[in-house]
Length: 554
Ligand SMILES: *[C@@H]1O[C@H](CO)[C@@H](O)[C@H](O)[C@H]1NC(C)=O
Ligand SMILES: *[C@@H]1O[C@H](CO)[C@@H](O)[C@H](O)[C@H]1NC(C)=O
Ligand SMILES: *[C@@H]1O[C@H](CO)[C@@H](O)[C@H](O)[C@H]1NC(C)=O
Ligand SMILES: *[C@@H]1O[C@H](CO)[C@@H](O)[C@H](O)[C@H]1NC(C)=O
Ligand SMILES: *[C@@H]1O[C@H](CO)[C@@H](O)[C@H](O)[C@H]1NC(C)=O
Ligand SMILES: *[C@@H]1O[C@H](CO)[C@@H](O)[C@H](O)[C@H]1NC(C)=O
Image (cartoon, rainbow, N blue to C red; front, side):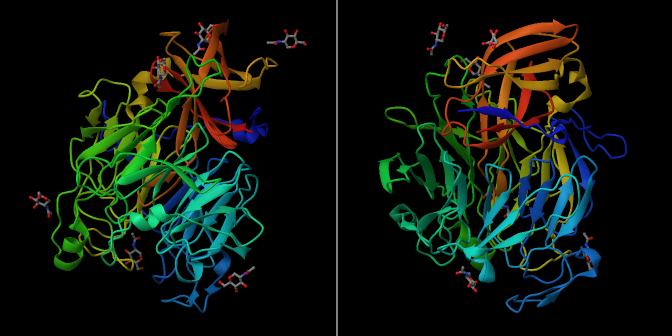
Protein backbone atom coordinates (compact mmCIF):
# COMPACT_ATOMS: atom_id res chain seq x y z
CA UNK A 1 0.00 0.00 0.00
CA UNK A 2 1.33 3.36 -0.96
CA UNK A 3 1.23 6.34 1.29
CA UNK A 4 1.03 9.58 -0.59
CA UNK A 5 1.37 13.10 0.65
CA UNK A 6 -1.15 15.47 -0.76
CA UNK A 7 0.98 17.65 -3.01
CA UNK A 8 -1.16 20.72 -3.62
CA UNK A 9 0.55 23.28 -1.41
CA UNK A 10 -2.71 24.90 -0.39
CA UNK A 11 -3.57 21.70 1.42
CA UNK A 12 -0.41 21.63 3.40
CA UNK A 13 -0.80 24.91 5.09
CA UNK A 14 -1.29 25.40 8.74
CA UNK A 15 -3.97 27.63 9.99
CA UNK A 16 -4.06 30.16 12.68
CA UNK A 17 -6.12 29.56 15.69
CA UNK A 18 -8.00 32.77 16.04
CA UNK A 19 -8.30 34.18 19.51
CA UNK A 20 -8.18 37.88 18.77
CA UNK A 21 -11.71 39.09 18.20
CA UNK A 22 -13.72 36.27 19.70
CA UNK A 23 -14.85 35.99 23.25
CA UNK A 24 -13.52 33.24 25.43
CA UNK A 25 -16.18 32.14 27.86
CA UNK A 26 -14.30 29.92 30.27
CA UNK A 27 -10.67 28.97 30.54
CA UNK A 28 -9.01 26.28 32.62
CA UNK A 29 -7.33 22.91 32.33
CA UNK A 30 -10.68 21.63 31.17
CA UNK A 31 -10.57 23.59 27.91
CA UNK A 32 -12.82 26.44 26.85
CA UNK A 33 -15.63 27.39 24.51
CA UNK A 34 -15.86 30.16 21.91
CA UNK A 35 -18.99 31.09 20.02
CA UNK A 36 -17.91 31.36 16.37
CA UNK A 37 -21.21 32.45 14.84
CA UNK A 38 -24.45 33.54 16.48
CA UNK A 39 -26.27 32.29 13.39
CA UNK A 40 -25.18 30.40 10.31
CA UNK A 41 -28.77 30.55 9.08
CA UNK A 42 -29.41 26.80 9.39
CA UNK A 43 -29.30 24.25 12.17
CA UNK A 44 -26.23 22.00 11.85
CA UNK A 45 -27.84 18.57 11.68
CA UNK A 46 -25.13 17.01 9.49
CA UNK A 47 -21.42 17.97 9.25
CA UNK A 48 -18.43 16.81 7.19
CA UNK A 49 -14.90 18.27 7.25
CA UNK A 50 -13.58 18.44 3.69
CA UNK A 51 -9.95 18.06 2.57
CA UNK A 52 -9.63 21.80 1.88
CA UNK A 53 -10.43 22.32 5.59
CA UNK A 54 -13.91 23.67 4.91
CA UNK A 55 -16.95 22.10 6.51
CA UNK A 56 -20.11 21.10 4.64
CA UNK A 57 -23.09 21.60 6.95
CA UNK A 58 -26.71 20.79 6.13
CA UNK A 59 -30.16 20.47 7.60
CA UNK A 60 -33.42 19.13 6.20
CA UNK A 61 -35.14 21.11 3.44
CA UNK A 62 -38.86 20.74 4.06
CA UNK A 63 -39.66 22.75 7.18
CA UNK A 64 -40.10 26.15 5.49
CA UNK A 65 -37.62 29.01 5.17
CA UNK A 66 -34.27 28.95 6.95
CA UNK A 67 -32.49 32.10 8.14
CA UNK A 68 -30.11 32.38 5.15
CA UNK A 69 -30.92 33.17 1.53
CA UNK A 70 -29.63 31.27 -1.46
CA UNK A 71 -26.88 33.07 -3.39
CA UNK A 72 -27.66 35.53 -6.21
CA UNK A 73 -31.37 35.81 -5.35
CA UNK A 74 -31.92 32.30 -6.62
CA UNK A 75 -34.87 30.18 -5.58
CA UNK A 76 -35.60 26.48 -5.70
CA UNK A 77 -38.92 25.15 -6.93
CA UNK A 78 -39.66 21.65 -5.69
CA UNK A 79 -43.22 20.35 -6.21
CA UNK A 80 -42.51 17.58 -3.66
CA UNK A 81 -41.56 19.92 -0.81
CA UNK A 82 -44.13 19.48 1.92
CA UNK A 83 -43.99 23.01 3.35
CA UNK A 84 -42.62 25.52 0.85
CA UNK A 85 -42.51 24.60 -2.83
CA UNK A 86 -40.86 27.84 -3.91
CA UNK A 87 -38.03 28.27 -1.43
CA UNK A 88 -35.44 31.04 -1.74
CA UNK A 89 -33.51 30.03 1.39
CA UNK A 90 -30.56 27.68 1.80
CA UNK A 91 -30.55 24.50 3.86
CA UNK A 92 -26.84 23.86 3.55
CA UNK A 93 -23.76 26.04 3.98
CA UNK A 94 -20.03 25.71 3.42
CA UNK A 95 -18.22 26.98 6.49
CA UNK A 96 -14.57 28.03 6.40
CA UNK A 97 -13.07 27.73 9.90
CA UNK A 98 -9.90 29.65 9.01
CA UNK A 99 -11.74 32.86 8.07
CA UNK A 100 -14.88 32.11 10.12
CA UNK A 101 -17.01 32.81 7.04
CA UNK A 102 -19.63 30.83 5.17
CA UNK A 103 -21.60 30.73 1.96
CA UNK A 104 -24.98 29.15 1.19
CA UNK A 105 -25.25 25.92 -0.83
CA UNK A 106 -28.20 24.52 -2.74
CA UNK A 107 -29.78 21.19 -1.85
CA UNK A 108 -32.47 20.14 -4.32
CA UNK A 109 -34.17 17.29 -2.47
CA UNK A 110 -34.66 16.49 1.20
CA UNK A 111 -31.52 15.21 2.94
CA UNK A 112 -33.18 14.91 6.35
CA UNK A 113 -31.66 12.23 8.61
CA UNK A 114 -29.35 11.03 5.87
CA UNK A 115 -25.85 9.60 5.84
CA UNK A 116 -22.56 10.25 4.08
CA UNK A 117 -18.89 9.53 3.63
CA UNK A 118 -15.92 11.02 1.84
CA UNK A 119 -14.85 9.01 -1.19
CA UNK A 120 -11.13 8.18 -1.52
CA UNK A 121 -10.63 11.31 -3.67
CA UNK A 122 -12.21 13.62 -1.10
CA UNK A 123 -15.67 14.07 -2.64
CA UNK A 124 -18.54 13.94 -0.18
CA UNK A 125 -20.89 11.14 -1.20
CA UNK A 126 -24.16 11.82 0.59
CA UNK A 127 -26.90 9.22 0.64
CA UNK A 128 -30.63 9.18 1.26
CA UNK A 129 -32.92 11.36 3.27
CA UNK A 130 -36.69 11.72 3.48
CA UNK A 131 -39.62 12.01 1.06
CA UNK A 132 -38.18 12.92 -2.36
CA UNK A 133 -34.74 12.25 -0.87
CA UNK A 134 -35.23 8.62 0.26
CA UNK A 135 -33.26 7.14 -2.63
CA UNK A 136 -31.08 10.09 -3.55
CA UNK A 137 -27.34 10.16 -4.07
CA UNK A 138 -25.72 13.58 -3.89
CA UNK A 139 -22.11 14.71 -4.16
CA UNK A 140 -20.13 17.73 -3.13
CA UNK A 141 -16.62 18.15 -4.53
CA UNK A 142 -14.36 20.79 -2.98
CA UNK A 143 -13.09 23.68 -5.11
CA UNK A 144 -10.31 25.24 -3.03
CA UNK A 145 -9.50 28.03 -5.46
CA UNK A 146 -12.90 29.43 -6.29
CA UNK A 147 -16.36 29.68 -4.78
CA UNK A 148 -18.41 27.88 -7.39
CA UNK A 149 -18.82 24.35 -6.10
CA UNK A 150 -22.24 23.24 -4.97
CA UNK A 151 -24.26 20.09 -4.38
CA UNK A 152 -24.89 17.82 -7.37
CA UNK A 153 -27.71 15.27 -7.45
CA UNK A 154 -26.76 12.03 -9.12
CA UNK A 155 -29.08 10.68 -11.82
CA UNK A 156 -28.48 7.27 -10.23
CA UNK A 157 -30.62 6.32 -7.27
CA UNK A 158 -29.99 4.15 -4.26
CA UNK A 159 -31.59 0.70 -4.43
CA UNK A 160 -33.43 1.12 -1.13
CA UNK A 161 -34.75 4.02 0.85
CA UNK A 162 -32.09 5.26 3.30
CA UNK A 163 -33.60 7.34 6.08
CA UNK A 164 -31.51 6.96 9.32
CA UNK A 165 -28.88 4.69 7.68
CA UNK A 166 -25.13 4.57 8.44
CA UNK A 167 -22.17 4.49 6.06
CA UNK A 168 -18.61 3.18 6.18
CA UNK A 169 -15.80 3.55 3.66
CA UNK A 170 -14.35 0.12 2.73
CA UNK A 171 -10.82 -1.05 1.80
CA UNK A 172 -11.67 -1.13 -1.93
CA UNK A 173 -12.79 2.50 -1.82
CA UNK A 174 -16.51 1.76 -2.10
CA UNK A 175 -18.95 2.81 0.61
CA UNK A 176 -21.36 0.46 2.37
CA UNK A 177 -24.74 1.89 3.45
CA UNK A 178 -26.47 -0.12 6.16
CA UNK A 179 -30.11 0.04 7.25
CA UNK A 180 -32.50 2.94 7.44
CA UNK A 181 -36.11 3.02 8.55
CA UNK A 182 -37.92 -0.07 7.16
CA UNK A 183 -34.85 -1.04 5.11
CA UNK A 184 -33.40 -4.24 6.55
CA UNK A 185 -30.72 -4.22 3.89
CA UNK A 186 -27.34 -2.87 2.87
CA UNK A 187 -25.91 -1.72 -0.44
CA UNK A 188 -22.73 -0.26 -1.89
CA UNK A 189 -21.91 2.93 -3.79
CA UNK A 190 -20.67 3.53 -6.37
CA UNK A 191 -22.26 0.67 -8.27
CA UNK A 192 -23.59 -0.02 -11.69
CA UNK A 193 -26.88 -1.75 -11.11
CA UNK A 194 -29.76 -1.74 -8.65
CA UNK A 195 -28.70 -4.19 -5.97
CA UNK A 196 -29.04 -4.66 -2.26
CA UNK A 197 -28.66 -7.47 0.26
CA UNK A 198 -30.87 -8.45 3.19
CA UNK A 199 -29.48 -8.26 6.68
CA UNK A 200 -31.76 -10.03 9.12
CA UNK A 201 -29.85 -8.56 12.08
CA UNK A 202 -31.57 -5.24 11.32
CA UNK A 203 -35.00 -6.86 11.52
CA UNK A 204 -34.14 -8.75 14.71
CA UNK A 205 -32.89 -5.67 16.53
CA UNK A 206 -35.91 -3.50 15.70
CA UNK A 207 -38.27 -2.86 18.62
CA UNK A 208 -41.89 -3.23 17.54
CA UNK A 209 -43.53 -0.11 19.00
CA UNK A 210 -44.35 2.59 16.50
CA UNK A 211 -41.51 5.09 16.18
CA UNK A 212 -39.46 3.23 18.76
CA UNK A 213 -37.20 1.12 16.57
CA UNK A 214 -34.09 1.59 18.74
CA UNK A 215 -31.88 0.23 15.95
CA UNK A 216 -31.64 3.16 13.54
CA UNK A 217 -28.34 4.74 12.60
CA UNK A 218 -26.55 1.47 13.47
CA UNK A 219 -22.95 1.88 14.63
CA UNK A 220 -20.54 0.62 11.95
CA UNK A 221 -16.79 0.12 12.37
CA UNK A 222 -14.45 -1.40 9.79
CA UNK A 223 -12.14 -3.78 11.63
CA UNK A 224 -8.47 -4.49 10.81
CA UNK A 225 -9.35 -7.95 9.43
CA UNK A 226 -11.61 -6.32 6.83
CA UNK A 227 -14.92 -7.38 8.42
CA UNK A 228 -17.53 -4.97 9.68
CA UNK A 229 -18.63 -4.52 13.29
CA UNK A 230 -22.32 -3.60 13.43
CA UNK A 231 -24.11 -2.57 16.63
CA UNK A 232 -27.88 -1.95 16.87
CA UNK A 233 -30.16 -1.65 19.92
CA UNK A 234 -28.18 -3.82 22.42
CA UNK A 235 -26.72 -6.34 19.99
CA UNK A 236 -23.66 -6.52 17.83
CA UNK A 237 -22.21 -8.77 15.15
CA UNK A 238 -19.02 -9.36 13.22
CA UNK A 239 -20.17 -9.21 9.62
CA UNK A 240 -18.55 -10.42 6.41
CA UNK A 241 -20.31 -8.06 3.99
CA UNK A 242 -18.68 -9.64 0.94
CA UNK A 243 -20.43 -12.94 1.55
CA UNK A 244 -23.45 -11.64 3.49
CA UNK A 245 -22.46 -13.80 6.45
CA UNK A 246 -22.63 -13.14 10.18
CA UNK A 247 -19.31 -14.50 11.47
CA UNK A 248 -20.16 -14.12 15.13
CA UNK A 249 -22.68 -12.65 17.51
CA UNK A 250 -21.02 -10.69 20.28
CA UNK A 251 -22.47 -10.81 23.80
CA UNK A 252 -25.40 -8.46 24.41
CA UNK A 253 -24.19 -5.25 26.07
CA UNK A 254 -24.94 -5.45 29.83
CA UNK A 255 -27.67 -3.21 31.26
CA UNK A 256 -31.19 -2.65 29.99
CA UNK A 257 -30.37 0.47 28.01
CA UNK A 258 -30.89 0.66 24.28
CA UNK A 259 -28.25 2.52 22.33
CA UNK A 260 -29.56 3.45 18.88
CA UNK A 261 -32.15 5.92 17.60
CA UNK A 262 -34.40 7.02 19.23
CA UNK A 263 -32.65 5.74 22.39
CA UNK A 264 -29.61 7.36 20.85
CA UNK A 265 -26.18 6.64 22.31
CA UNK A 266 -22.91 6.90 20.42
CA UNK A 267 -19.94 4.73 19.51
CA UNK A 268 -16.32 4.94 18.40
CA UNK A 269 -13.63 2.53 17.35
CA UNK A 270 -10.94 3.38 19.91
CA UNK A 271 -7.57 4.38 18.36
CA UNK A 272 -5.84 1.57 16.51
CA UNK A 273 -2.35 1.52 17.98
CA UNK A 274 0.29 0.27 15.54
CA UNK A 275 3.21 1.06 17.84
CA UNK A 276 5.77 -1.75 17.85
CA UNK A 277 3.88 -3.98 15.43
CA UNK A 278 6.58 -3.55 12.75
CA UNK A 279 3.98 -3.61 9.99
CA UNK A 280 3.66 -7.36 10.39
CA UNK A 281 0.90 -7.77 12.97
CA UNK A 282 -2.60 -6.34 12.87
CA UNK A 283 -3.58 -4.11 15.78
CA UNK A 284 -6.14 -5.07 18.40
CA UNK A 285 -9.46 -3.32 17.91
CA UNK A 286 -11.73 -2.10 20.65
CA UNK A 287 -15.18 -0.58 20.25
CA UNK A 288 -16.76 1.78 22.77
CA UNK A 289 -20.48 2.56 23.11
CA UNK A 290 -21.72 5.32 25.44
CA UNK A 291 -25.09 6.60 26.60
CA UNK A 292 -28.58 5.77 25.45
CA UNK A 293 -31.99 5.36 27.04
CA UNK A 294 -33.93 2.80 29.06
CA UNK A 295 -36.77 0.71 27.60
CA UNK A 296 -40.00 2.68 27.38
CA UNK A 297 -38.26 6.06 27.54
CA UNK A 298 -39.40 7.05 24.05
CA UNK A 299 -43.06 6.24 24.69
CA UNK A 300 -43.09 8.10 28.01
CA UNK A 301 -41.48 11.15 26.41
CA UNK A 302 -43.72 11.17 23.33
CA UNK A 303 -47.03 10.44 25.02
CA UNK A 304 -46.71 11.92 28.49
CA UNK A 305 -43.73 14.28 28.32
CA UNK A 306 -42.13 12.30 31.12
CA UNK A 307 -38.39 12.26 30.64
CA UNK A 308 -36.64 9.25 32.16
CA UNK A 309 -33.06 9.64 33.24
CA UNK A 310 -30.72 8.59 30.42
CA UNK A 311 -28.05 5.89 30.53
CA UNK A 312 -24.92 6.57 32.54
CA UNK A 313 -22.88 3.73 31.13
CA UNK A 314 -20.26 3.09 28.49
CA UNK A 315 -19.22 -0.36 27.35
CA UNK A 316 -15.89 -1.39 25.82
CA UNK A 317 -15.56 -4.54 23.77
CA UNK A 318 -12.20 -5.78 22.52
CA UNK A 319 -13.61 -7.32 19.36
CA UNK A 320 -10.36 -8.98 18.35
CA UNK A 321 -10.24 -11.13 21.52
CA UNK A 322 -10.96 -14.85 21.21
CA UNK A 323 -13.91 -14.47 23.59
CA UNK A 324 -14.76 -10.75 23.72
CA UNK A 325 -16.59 -9.51 26.83
CA UNK A 326 -18.06 -6.07 27.48
CA UNK A 327 -16.37 -4.04 30.19
CA UNK A 328 -18.78 -1.46 31.61
CA UNK A 329 -17.93 1.95 33.06
CA UNK A 330 -19.97 4.85 34.44
CA UNK A 331 -19.86 8.37 33.00
CA UNK A 332 -19.96 11.28 35.48
CA UNK A 333 -23.52 12.11 34.31
CA UNK A 334 -26.26 10.35 32.36
CA UNK A 335 -26.41 11.18 28.66
CA UNK A 336 -28.61 10.48 25.66
CA UNK A 337 -27.67 11.83 22.19
CA UNK A 338 -23.96 12.21 23.02
CA UNK A 339 -21.42 12.95 20.34
CA UNK A 340 -18.14 11.08 20.73
CA UNK A 341 -15.17 12.78 19.09
CA UNK A 342 -11.77 11.10 18.81
CA UNK A 343 -8.88 13.50 19.42
CA UNK A 344 -5.43 13.29 17.79
CA UNK A 345 -3.89 12.52 21.21
CA UNK A 346 -5.86 9.26 21.40
CA UNK A 347 -8.47 10.49 23.90
CA UNK A 348 -12.20 10.84 23.37
CA UNK A 349 -14.48 13.80 24.10
CA UNK A 350 -18.11 12.95 24.88
CA UNK A 351 -20.31 16.03 24.47
CA UNK A 352 -23.77 17.36 23.56
CA UNK A 353 -27.07 15.65 24.33
CA UNK A 354 -29.37 15.56 27.32
CA UNK A 355 -29.55 13.89 30.73
CA UNK A 356 -33.23 12.92 30.40
CA UNK A 357 -35.48 11.65 27.63
CA UNK A 358 -34.68 10.40 24.13
CA UNK A 359 -34.15 11.64 20.60
CA UNK A 360 -37.20 12.83 18.65
CA UNK A 361 -39.46 15.87 18.69
CA UNK A 362 -39.63 17.56 22.11
CA UNK A 363 -38.47 14.32 23.72
CA UNK A 364 -35.62 15.44 25.95
CA UNK A 365 -34.94 17.69 28.92
CA UNK A 366 -32.01 18.65 31.08
CA UNK A 367 -29.24 19.39 28.54
CA UNK A 368 -25.86 17.79 29.28
CA UNK A 369 -23.69 20.91 29.05
CA UNK A 370 -20.40 19.54 30.39
CA UNK A 371 -18.33 17.56 27.93
CA UNK A 372 -16.42 14.63 29.36
CA UNK A 373 -12.89 13.62 28.46
CA UNK A 374 -12.26 9.88 28.30
CA UNK A 375 -8.68 8.58 28.41
CA UNK A 376 -8.81 5.01 27.08
CA UNK A 377 -5.22 4.27 28.16
CA UNK A 378 -5.58 5.28 31.83
CA UNK A 379 -6.48 2.89 34.60
CA UNK A 380 -10.15 2.28 35.20
CA UNK A 381 -11.44 4.86 37.68
CA UNK A 382 -9.14 7.55 36.26
CA UNK A 383 -10.47 7.76 32.74
CA UNK A 384 -13.31 10.31 32.87
CA UNK A 385 -12.86 14.02 33.47
CA UNK A 386 -15.61 16.65 33.33
CA UNK A 387 -14.70 19.56 31.07
CA UNK A 388 -15.70 23.22 30.80
CA UNK A 389 -19.47 23.55 30.36
CA UNK A 390 -20.94 24.82 27.10
CA UNK A 391 -23.38 27.74 27.14
CA UNK A 392 -25.67 26.31 24.50
CA UNK A 393 -27.82 23.20 24.89
CA UNK A 394 -27.20 20.88 21.93
CA UNK A 395 -29.82 18.21 21.94
CA UNK A 396 -31.69 16.46 19.13
CA UNK A 397 -30.26 17.25 15.68
CA UNK A 398 -26.92 18.61 16.82
CA UNK A 399 -23.44 17.58 15.66
CA UNK A 400 -19.72 17.84 16.45
CA UNK A 401 -16.57 17.21 14.38
CA UNK A 402 -12.81 17.50 14.91
CA UNK A 403 -11.19 20.27 12.85
CA UNK A 404 -7.64 19.93 11.50
CA UNK A 405 -6.54 22.66 13.96
CA UNK A 406 -7.51 20.42 16.89
CA UNK A 407 -10.69 22.25 17.87
CA UNK A 408 -14.10 20.57 17.96
CA UNK A 409 -16.72 22.33 15.85
CA UNK A 410 -20.14 22.08 17.51
CA UNK A 411 -23.49 23.13 16.09
CA UNK A 412 -27.15 22.40 15.68
CA UNK A 413 -29.95 21.34 18.02
CA UNK A 414 -33.50 21.48 16.82
CA UNK A 415 -35.91 19.26 18.72
CA UNK A 416 -38.85 20.83 16.85
CA UNK A 417 -40.69 20.00 13.65
CA UNK A 418 -40.13 23.50 12.33
CA UNK A 419 -37.70 26.30 13.18
CA UNK A 420 -38.84 27.52 16.58
CA UNK A 421 -36.91 30.26 18.35
CA UNK A 422 -39.25 30.71 21.29
CA UNK A 423 -39.37 27.32 23.03
CA UNK A 424 -37.32 26.38 26.01
CA UNK A 425 -34.80 24.53 23.80
CA UNK A 426 -34.98 26.72 20.70
CA UNK A 427 -33.76 25.84 17.23
CA UNK A 428 -30.05 26.61 17.41
CA UNK A 429 -28.44 28.29 14.43
CA UNK A 430 -25.23 29.11 16.27
CA UNK A 431 -21.83 27.51 15.85
CA UNK A 432 -19.37 26.99 18.71
CA UNK A 433 -15.82 25.74 18.98
CA UNK A 434 -14.63 23.70 21.92
CA UNK A 435 -10.91 24.19 22.55
CA UNK A 436 -9.47 21.15 24.34
CA UNK A 437 -6.90 21.91 27.01
CA UNK A 438 -4.08 20.97 24.61
CA UNK A 439 -4.73 24.20 22.66
CA UNK A 440 -4.04 26.32 25.75
CA UNK A 441 -1.19 28.91 25.59
CA UNK A 442 0.82 27.12 28.28
CA UNK A 443 1.44 24.26 25.84
CA UNK A 444 2.84 26.49 23.08
CA UNK A 445 6.52 25.75 23.86
CA UNK A 446 5.97 22.00 23.50
CA UNK A 447 3.60 22.15 20.52
CA UNK A 448 5.11 20.66 17.37
CA UNK A 449 4.65 22.46 14.03
CA UNK A 450 4.74 20.28 10.92
CA UNK A 451 7.11 21.60 8.26
CA UNK A 452 7.12 18.81 5.67
CA UNK A 453 5.87 15.28 5.09
CA UNK A 454 8.00 13.15 2.76
CA UNK A 455 7.95 9.59 1.62
CA UNK A 456 11.26 7.73 1.98
CA UNK A 457 12.28 4.99 -0.39
CA UNK A 458 12.41 2.30 2.23
CA UNK A 459 9.80 -0.24 1.21
CA UNK A 460 11.13 -3.17 3.20
CA UNK A 461 7.89 -3.59 5.10
CA UNK A 462 4.18 -3.69 4.23
CA UNK A 463 3.59 -0.21 5.47
CA UNK A 464 5.89 2.10 3.57
CA UNK A 465 8.10 4.42 5.58
CA UNK A 466 7.67 8.15 5.45
CA UNK A 467 9.07 11.02 7.41
CA UNK A 468 7.67 14.13 8.99
CA UNK A 469 9.85 17.15 9.70
CA UNK A 470 8.63 19.39 12.46
CA UNK A 471 9.82 22.23 14.63
CA UNK A 472 9.54 22.35 18.37
CA UNK A 473 10.79 24.89 20.88
CA UNK A 474 11.19 22.61 23.90
CA UNK A 475 11.76 18.93 23.40
CA UNK A 476 10.45 17.17 26.51
CA UNK A 477 10.49 13.47 25.70
CA UNK A 478 11.58 11.56 22.62
CA UNK A 479 9.49 8.47 23.45
CA UNK A 480 6.59 10.90 23.83
CA UNK A 481 6.51 11.68 20.10
CA UNK A 482 3.80 9.97 18.13
CA UNK A 483 2.28 10.29 14.69
CA UNK A 484 -1.45 9.90 14.31
CA UNK A 485 -3.80 9.79 11.36
CA UNK A 486 -7.37 10.92 11.89
CA UNK A 487 -10.06 10.15 9.29
CA UNK A 488 -12.56 12.98 8.71
CA UNK A 489 -15.99 11.77 9.80
CA UNK A 490 -19.52 12.43 8.61
CA UNK A 491 -21.45 13.26 11.75
CA UNK A 492 -25.16 13.31 12.40
CA UNK A 493 -27.54 11.97 15.07
CA UNK A 494 -24.69 11.37 17.53
CA UNK A 495 -22.69 9.06 15.27
CA UNK A 496 -19.43 9.98 13.55
CA UNK A 497 -19.37 7.71 10.50
CA UNK A 498 -15.85 6.70 9.38
CA UNK A 499 -14.35 8.18 12.51
CA UNK A 500 -10.95 6.51 12.98
CA UNK A 501 -7.61 7.28 14.61
CA UNK A 502 -4.41 5.39 13.84
CA UNK A 503 -1.37 5.73 16.07
CA UNK A 504 1.44 4.89 13.67
CA UNK A 505 4.56 2.86 14.38
CA UNK A 506 7.39 5.35 14.92
CA UNK A 507 10.71 3.95 13.73
CA UNK A 508 13.09 6.83 14.48
CA UNK A 509 13.22 10.39 15.74
CA UNK A 510 16.22 12.55 14.81
CA UNK A 511 17.27 16.09 15.53
CA UNK A 512 17.99 17.70 12.14
CA UNK A 513 18.51 21.35 13.12
CA UNK A 514 18.16 23.56 16.12
CA UNK A 515 14.48 23.17 17.08
CA UNK A 516 14.08 20.91 14.02
CA UNK A 517 13.26 17.20 14.16
CA UNK A 518 12.43 14.42 11.79
CA UNK A 519 10.32 11.44 12.71
CA UNK A 520 10.27 8.33 10.53
CA UNK A 521 7.06 6.33 10.77
CA UNK A 522 5.59 3.29 9.09
CA UNK A 523 2.45 3.84 7.02
CA UNK A 524 -0.64 1.78 7.90
CA UNK A 525 -0.18 -1.93 7.14
CA UNK A 526 -3.32 -2.47 5.07
CA UNK A 527 -6.34 -0.81 3.54
CA UNK A 528 -8.57 -2.49 6.10
CA UNK A 529 -6.61 -0.78 8.87
CA UNK A 530 -6.74 2.51 6.95
CA UNK A 531 -9.28 2.62 4.11
CA UNK A 532 -8.05 4.67 1.13
CA UNK A 533 -8.49 8.42 1.27
CA UNK A 534 -7.32 11.55 2.99
CA UNK A 535 -6.42 11.72 6.65
CA UNK A 536 -5.37 14.52 8.97
CA UNK A 537 -1.82 13.79 10.10
CA UNK A 538 -0.79 15.08 13.52
CA UNK A 539 2.49 14.96 15.40
CA UNK A 540 1.78 14.61 19.10
CA UNK A 541 4.51 15.56 21.56
CA UNK A 542 4.07 15.17 25.32
CA UNK A 543 0.33 14.87 24.72
CA UNK A 544 0.16 18.10 22.70
CA UNK A 545 -0.80 17.80 19.02
CA UNK A 546 0.41 19.91 16.12
CA UNK A 547 -2.08 21.29 13.66
CA UNK A 548 -3.02 18.50 11.26
CA UNK A 549 -2.01 18.36 7.59
CA UNK A 550 -3.76 16.26 4.96
CA UNK A 551 -2.08 13.13 3.63
CA UNK A 552 -3.46 10.53 1.30
CA UNK A 553 -3.42 6.81 1.97
CA UNK A 554 -3.91 4.69 -1.13
C1 LIG B 1 -34.37 33.71 12.22
O1 LIG B 1 -35.35 34.45 11.51
C2 LIG B 1 -36.55 34.70 12.26
C3 LIG B 1 -37.57 35.30 11.32
O2 LIG B 1 -36.99 36.36 10.61
C4 LIG B 1 -36.21 35.59 13.43
O3 LIG B 1 -37.36 35.82 14.23
C5 LIG B 1 -35.17 34.88 14.29
O4 LIG B 1 -34.75 35.72 15.34
C6 LIG B 1 -33.96 34.49 13.46
N1 LIG B 1 -33.13 33.64 14.32
C7 LIG B 1 -31.84 33.81 14.47
C8 LIG B 1 -31.17 32.90 15.44
O5 LIG B 1 -31.20 34.62 13.83
C1 LIG C 1 -34.43 8.03 -9.70
O1 LIG C 1 -35.63 8.28 -8.99
C2 LIG C 1 -36.39 9.36 -9.52
C3 LIG C 1 -37.58 9.55 -8.61
O2 LIG C 1 -37.14 9.95 -7.35
C4 LIG C 1 -36.81 9.01 -10.92
O3 LIG C 1 -37.51 10.12 -11.48
C5 LIG C 1 -35.59 8.72 -11.76
O4 LIG C 1 -36.00 8.29 -13.05
C6 LIG C 1 -34.74 7.63 -11.13
N1 LIG C 1 -33.51 7.47 -11.88
C7 LIG C 1 -33.09 6.30 -12.34
C8 LIG C 1 -31.81 6.31 -13.10
O5 LIG C 1 -33.71 5.28 -12.14
C1 LIG D 1 9.54 -5.59 15.97
O1 LIG D 1 10.93 -5.51 15.68
C2 LIG D 1 11.74 -5.38 16.85
C3 LIG D 1 13.18 -5.12 16.41
O2 LIG D 1 13.51 -5.94 15.31
C4 LIG D 1 11.59 -6.63 17.70
O3 LIG D 1 12.35 -6.49 18.89
C5 LIG D 1 10.11 -6.79 18.07
O4 LIG D 1 9.91 -8.00 18.77
C6 LIG D 1 9.24 -6.80 16.81
N1 LIG D 1 7.85 -6.79 17.23
C7 LIG D 1 6.92 -7.58 16.68
C8 LIG D 1 5.54 -7.43 17.22
O5 LIG D 1 7.15 -8.38 15.80
C1 LIG E 1 -34.51 13.56 35.07
O1 LIG E 1 -34.49 12.30 35.72
C2 LIG E 1 -34.36 12.39 37.13
C3 LIG E 1 -34.19 10.97 37.67
O2 LIG E 1 -35.26 10.17 37.26
C4 LIG E 1 -35.58 13.08 37.70
O3 LIG E 1 -35.45 13.21 39.08
C5 LIG E 1 -35.69 14.46 37.07
O4 LIG E 1 -36.88 15.07 37.48
C6 LIG E 1 -35.70 14.35 35.55
N1 LIG E 1 -35.64 15.68 35.00
C7 LIG E 1 -36.53 16.13 34.13
C8 LIG E 1 -36.35 17.54 33.67
O5 LIG E 1 -37.46 15.46 33.72
C1 LIG F 1 0.37 2.80 21.84
O1 LIG F 1 1.07 1.69 22.31
C2 LIG F 1 2.31 2.00 22.92
C3 LIG F 1 3.04 0.70 23.20
O2 LIG F 1 2.20 -0.17 23.85
C4 LIG F 1 2.04 2.83 24.15
O3 LIG F 1 3.26 3.17 24.77
C5 LIG F 1 1.30 4.10 23.75
O4 LIG F 1 0.93 4.83 24.90
C6 LIG F 1 0.03 3.76 22.97
N1 LIG F 1 -0.51 5.00 22.45
C7 LIG F 1 -1.81 5.29 22.50
C8 LIG F 1 -2.23 6.63 21.99
O5 LIG F 1 -2.63 4.51 22.94
C1 LIG G 1 17.02 5.41 -1.00
O1 LIG G 1 17.59 5.23 -2.28
C2 LIG G 1 18.93 5.71 -2.38
C3 LIG G 1 19.37 5.61 -3.84
O2 LIG G 1 19.01 4.37 -4.38
C4 LIG G 1 19.83 4.90 -1.45
O3 LIG G 1 21.16 5.38 -1.51
C5 LIG G 1 19.30 5.04 -0.03
O4 LIG G 1 20.02 4.22 0.84
C6 LIG G 1 17.83 4.65 0.04
N1 LIG G 1 17.31 4.97 1.37
C7 LIG G 1 16.61 4.12 2.07
C8 LIG G 1 16.13 4.62 3.39
O5 LIG G 1 16.34 3.00 1.69
